Image 1 (cartoon, helix red, strand yellow):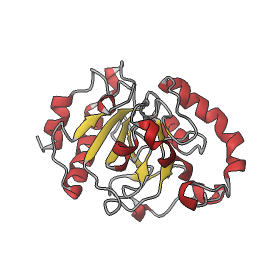
Image 2 (cartoon, one colour):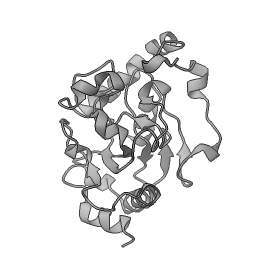
Image 3 (tube, helix red, strand yellow):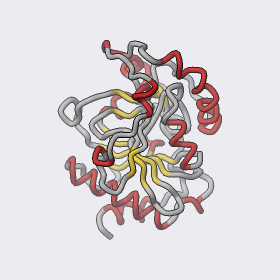
Length: 241
């Protein structure tokens, strides 16, 4: 899952620090320490309620003001999704950086994650302003349903490396790296169709140099998607096989 030291303030440290997925929080300005994916996720949920009230109106990097709690939880119209098959499930604005990609940063990578949590709990974590991490998309195991949590033009804090965050789209997959039963045919097909559409949109080559696992991000200590993820099958599906 995403890690939380991906914010602008931690750029200098991120090149050598652990990455972010639902597993850890290395993408945010507030937390540069690594923790187990599961404990971080659970801890973020507990902290969220206490943190929400104090976050409204706080100043965010670059002089921007964080939206109110009401604004953060508002659900824009379905037309705001970038992928037509996705459902809009907005992350807290405290967990990503507003941008205008690809004008501000090129998009040339797709990063594959595994949540180490359930689909529903992952969405809750991304909506928690204390979690300090999120990805653009989350894919459900049972049926391949896709939620979009961050617009593609914004920078999601998912890779644990600011440079990689700025130029990538992060896709989370429900499951655990040591439980291959979560990697269903429905999940592979739905995720591959999403990745293919992203690659076509931004001119990203559909190969393993540009579609990578979180484990391959420099500085990360994450292992996802793990040895049970079938890369040969996935890349074949992305290429229409």
